[in-house]
Length: 81
Image (cartoon, rainbow, N blue to C red; front, side):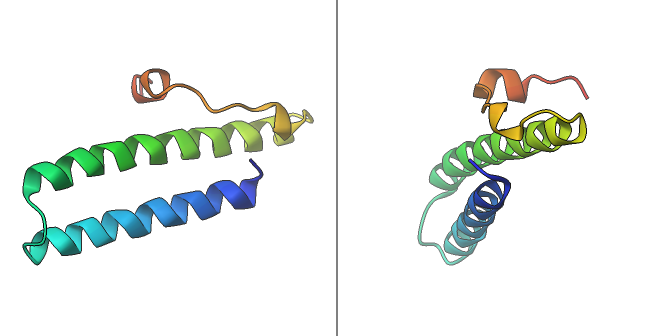
């Protein structure tokens, strides 16, 4: 994925998150359904941001950003801050 494609995916995931929160507020879905999907969205967002950071770091180091690869959820979610 190219940077603009990753950013587009991030935008779509954020839009879906907002839609879910509106649907929950409107009573169109229960909080368990919302929480489950939000967790999935957050994991996807974290993976997208990680991939974008990898690409930018590679570019900054004079390497090919296309060599960056999406990492597994378990790896991305367990980073130490």
